[in-house]
Image 1 (cartoon, one colour):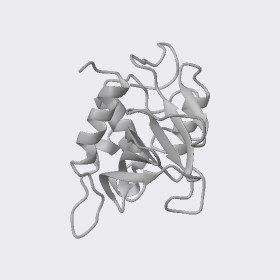
Image 2 (cartoon, one colour):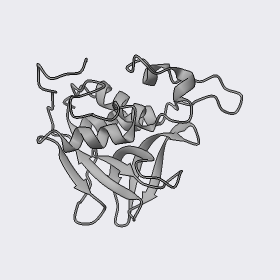
Image 3 (cartoon, helix red, strand yellow):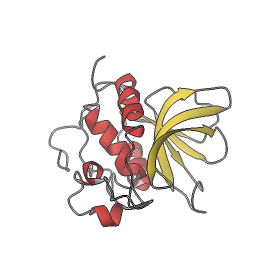
Length: 179
């Protein structure tokens, strides 16, 4: 399987979703270090309970997409935050951004951003699509009750957007950010 493809991203996401990664929960010591280490100003303690976007970033890195942790388009935050992913997608014309669940058929390796899944606010969760079904999607996610997992979610009003990174994507040389 070729690296830096959405197909490979889905494969990596499924594998990492089943690790499972977890924060400090059920008496376990957090194993989030591989997720946190890409973000120099973030600690495992700060990430605890807030790491779904960091999980998506780890999957993209493992799938060999060349994306810095804070691309130029991320004005508000870096890619450890769902809002950072939205800003990144909206500011790079090579990346497809589809608002809402209507009119878009997600494919394995697409990224999904949700609103109001765990909190009553926008951009509160995200994951990587593994499979599209008629009324649901199978998604690899980090931070579901502070664990990574593969989960089935309805295609409904909670879907804020889909992001499709093109196969072979590499962040443009000379742009801000550090790989």
